[in-house]
Image 1: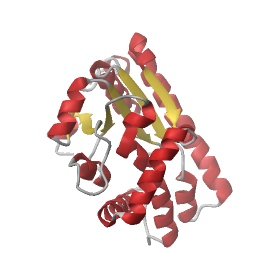
Image 2 (image 1 turned 30 degrees about the vertical axis):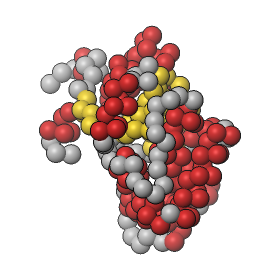
Image 3 (image 1 turned 90 degrees about the horizontal axis):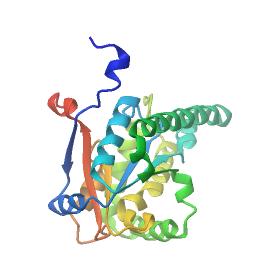
Length: 241
């Protein structure tokens, strides 16, 4: 077994799969990538996050890293935590994810200058985000197919939350919907939000929303320059994870 100090210097090999031919073409342009990080998600340990950011730095000219800091407390409260306890937990979780992002960027050296790191709450203050949010909220309200996809996303979030157990309550579903509504603009039109012509959302798995929008459906559609690529360690692919 390798010593930790040596193992940390050997990046994980990454495996990337675009969700459609259109996503493949946009990925090949290498203009911009969005790395979304779910705070508190055990997948994003230091090793995987560092490998993902190194891979993105070698594949794209510009990269935005967005960590989700919204609606985490409401899910914890739905689990029965007090508001005070939920707030303390959120602060600890966000401090940890910021630390891991900072350490990953330190590994990148000069390439780190091409990365911008922001919390989702910061983006939510931007007029362009708010304009896209208006469109996605309207689609969730009016487009029955897209609404059902978002409902599937809510169920996935609620069922995979840390420590998930027991009954799924209406409070859980409301918290999950708020989470999805906040993230949906990034899936629908990250080119507009980040001021680029094309953008690739990088995540370690397909989600109901990314899989649906990648196919450019006839109803509510993602922006023309929007793409999705699943990126995860090759060892996970070989293990069937």
